[in-house]
Image 1: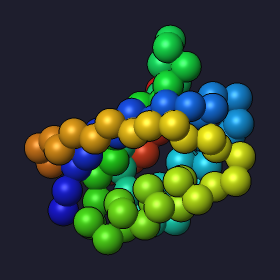
Image 2 (image 1 turned 180 degrees about the horizontal axis):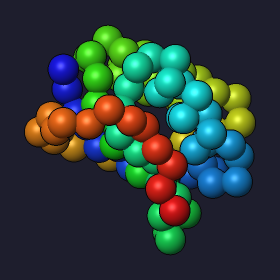
Image 3 (image 1 turned 45 degrees about the horizontal axis):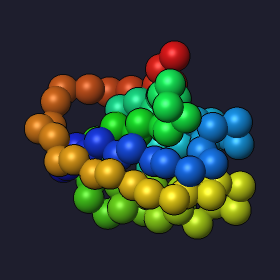
Image 4 (image 1 turned 60 degrees about the horizontal axis):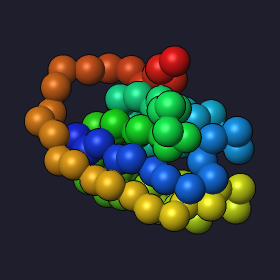
Length: 88
């Protein structure tokens, strides 16, 4: 089990990023959250099995409507959690 925080830069707002992340998280049994930031980036904090998290990120990177110009990644401590949500 791992927990990571990602920050996506580029054309990632207004293109269905949060709803795609929510759908993928439910399919892969991942917890955490996704949130649009004021600088037009998107924060994604995810927790799950390493293969599932990597699969989610690969799907996001391959999604045709997102133009990702950069990604920052941070390893975090696993926490008790049972849901993935969209934060506002």
